[in-house]
Image 1 (cartoon, rainbow, N blue to C red):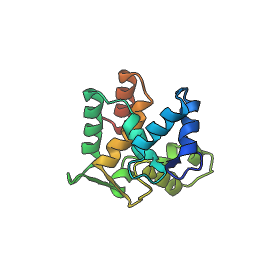
Image 2: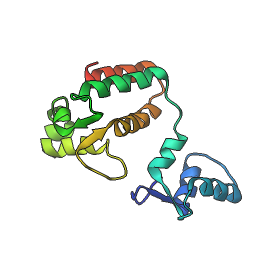
Image 3: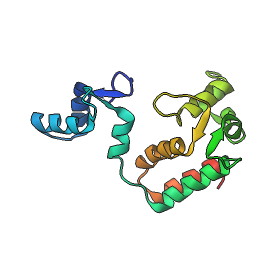
Image 4: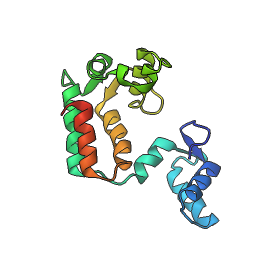
Length: 158
């Protein structure tokens, strides 16, 4: 949907995205919906905010798993997971691109860490909000609660 990968949707990208996903609206309806999302009338929509708005709500069970994973990683209990905390649990050597020699451990780890950063702000720390936002996106792509549970327990050894 974000064709130019700038984390913003202009009207053309928004319109094309709706059509690509089978949302059939009239031209006037598309303009109205776009205006609702374009809160500051800039002519573009923040892509991350758009995704957060259209995601289905998560079940309490999923939120509980995400919270448990965050607490396990937040060694100091200050609401922030540091790079060192993440390095202690993330194994880049299991990544296919490391195994193939395409990327280094550091490349793989930085790519992994960037998944949690919001609005392109990479500070090497993961807040609870960033962690939750990332897993909200993951959750939206997994229909089955049992599979989500299994994935979280395996990923973070819960």
